[in-house]
Image 1 (tube, one colour):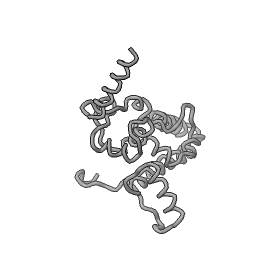
Image 2 (cartoon, rainbow, N blue to C red; image 1 turned 90 degrees about the vertical axis):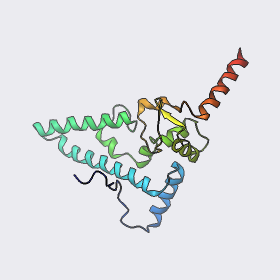
Image 3 (cartoon, one colour; image 1 turned 45 degrees about the vertical axis):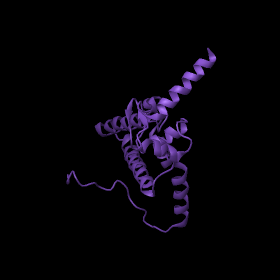
Image 4 (cartoon, helix red, strand yellow; image 1 turned 180 degrees about the horizontal axis):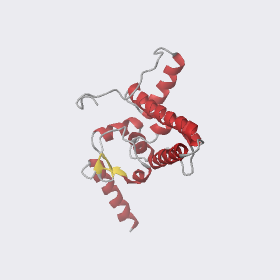
Length: 182
């Protein structure tokens, strides 16, 4: 199993490090999603690669007769349900939909992107800063990892942390609006 104190790489570096087209595409994605470095992008590419590999293997085994085919169908439904729960696939998805996924589908589910899309931060970089400084909570619990994957049911529970000055400022603004309308 290995030493639990030693961290293992969770990404694979590109085979051709100086490919211009790949470098330009990665740079655009890093800027668009406010990633700290390309290692974060490579980590999500590795996650996508693993799901695509599982989907290809299951597609090959689903049509087999007997117990092996039934096991492959059950495992395929489990994988699809997990991706639906994560918010990456829509309801009624199939194994072919897993093969059509892109790395941007996974990057959209990061906490940093969700905070920016919900308007809690003005920029994607500010969203990262708010998260790392402990101003963002998911379901009332402080989360300080910008790459935290937000599941579909947790998406509506993203807000400022209770003790954050941003939460208090938002509370004062809401109180003033209520006072003006009354």
